[in-house]
Length: 490
Ligand SMILES: Cc1ncc(COP(=O)(O)O)c(C=O)c1O
Image 1 (cartoon, rainbow, N blue to C red):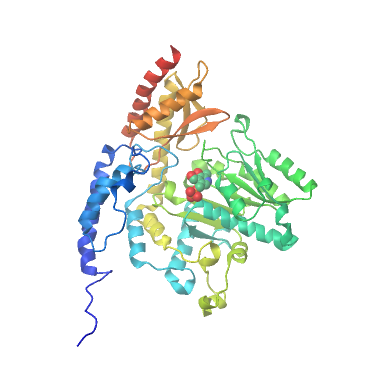
Image 2: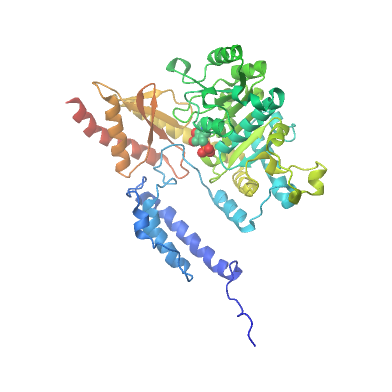
C-alpha cells in the first residue's frame, strides 16, 4: 500500500508536559536550595564548555533527565550566580515566584502581539499594566494612557533609549530637513550609561556631537544644568541643533542623581527632548521618601526603568513611558500590507510594533501583572526599603572600620567604598581586595573609578539576600583586607 508512517513526533505533547514540568520544577528547587554552596562568580576558564560538549547536535532525542544532569555538571559551574544571596555586583537582577510563573505562562501561550488584532488581550493588558505601574511609581499623570501619554514594555533600557532618540531625531529632522542630521547634538554626563552613546551612534548622530559633561564631587557626580546650558549655547552659536538631554536617577557607577527640575526647565526652554533613565533606581519612585529625586519628572519627555532590576520581574522587563506617543509612532511605525486590519486602519487601537524596534514581541505584561497582583504595592515597597536598610547597615560597618572609607554618599542600596590610601598605589590595594573577595567565591562585587579613585561597589538587591549575607560579606571583606593592608603598609 505504501504511504507515510504515522508520525510519533509530538513537539507539544500535553501528557509529556505534565510529566516534565514537575521534573523541571524539582531541578529549579534544588538549585535554589543549594545556591549558597556555589562560588558566586564562576571560576571556569574561557572555552571550558566547548571542551565538554559534543561538536554536533544529537540525531535522536535525549531524555530530559540526561540534559538536566548536563546542566548540573557542565552548565552550573560556568554560571555566575546572579540569584545567589551573596551577589552584590553590577545592579542585581531580581526574580520571584510570580516573575517565573509569568514567564512560564507567557512562554506557554506564545502569542506575538505586534499589533492589537494579533492578540488584543496582549496589547490591552500591557496598556493597563503600564498605567498601574506608572501609578505605583507615582509618575506624572501625563505619562499614563489615561493622561494622554502611554507606556510600553521593552526588553532593555538600551532599546528604550534608541526608540526615544529616534523619535526626537525624526521630530527635529521634520523641522530642519534630513540633511540636518549632522547638526544634531546630545548632552550627557561622564556618569551617563554608555548605552546613550551607543544609541546615539545607532540613530546616526555624529560621534563628535555627543557632549560629555564632566561631573565632580562638588556636583555630587550629577549633571550640572549650568554646564548643559553653556554647552547648548555654544552649539547654537556654531549653528548646531541641540536634540536630547540624557538624565539619570541612580547612575550605574555611584548612584548619582541628576537634577531633573532645572534640566527639565532647560529642555523646555530650548525645545530639547529630556529622557530620564532610572534603570535601577526607578523602583524607588514608589516610596514617598525618594520623591525628591524625581521632582521635575513632569518636565521630561520620557522615562524608563528596568523592573527586572529591583521590582522582582525577572529578565527582561523594561518599562518606557512617553508623554507624546505620537512622536514614537511617527518615527517607528511601519505600514506593511500584510498587517493591515480594520482596527488599526480606524486608529482605534495601540499597535505596539510602532513603539519599538522589532516587529515581534513577547507577552511581558502577563509577568508584570502577576508580580503586581501576587505581591501588591505594599510588599513591593517593603522589599525596596529592606534592601536599602541592609545597604545602610553595610555602610555603617564600613564607616566603623577606620581602614575604610565610604567614597560617595549613598542614596539607594549601592555603597561605594574603598580602603583608605596611605602610601602610593591605593588603586592597586583596592583592586587586590576586590579580586581576593571575588576569587574566594563567597561574594561577588564589582568596581567603579570615580575621579581617579578605584572604588568597590556593594549593591544589595539580589532577591534572596538577608542580613546575614550582608554581615557575612563584610566579614569576608575585612578578613581579605587584613592580609592586603599588612602587605601594603609594611
Ligand atoms: C543607569 C543605567 N542605564 C542603563 C542601563 C542599561 O540597561 P539595559 O541593560 O537594560 O540596556 C543600566 C544597566 O545597568 C543602568 O544602570
